[in-house]
Amino acid sequence: MFSKEEKEAIYKVIETRRDVRSFNKDAVPMDAVARILEAAHHAPSVGFMQPWNFILVESDEIKQKLAWAADKERRALAIHYEEDERASKFLSLKIEGLKEAPLTICVTCDPTRGGSHVLGRNSIPETDMMSTACAIQNMWLASCVEGLAMGWVSFYKKAD
Image (tube, rainbow, N blue to C red; front, side, top):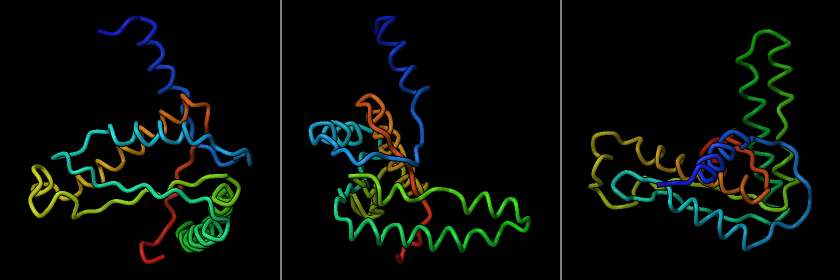
């Protein structure tokens, strides 16, 4: 059973979490990063496969490459908007946070994690992605509690 204050706190975190695109350059405390990753590892996963991997990126060179890949895909996706206004709005989406943020956490999903037979994944193969999304949501909530911002960049081609 949770107290009234604990209930209010969790709902406040859920309601105040935001996807941000602007970051400051202050170093992220590694103890906070450890707590955020711990929260991610406590996410539910089908068959306890925990298909996620977390890669901490601090290298400016790698962040530049990530921003290049995201921008390339963003420009490619803009052609789907016939109206100039919608294309312009889509192209204005800010991805510079990839270069600005002091830390980027690249989240990957390993569809082979847990072996060839994972309860639930055999029936619905996408459950590995669903489980990974749960881990990302836990990271987002934990980041909010830590007073840190998080943004989700999903404009990538897998090959990039």
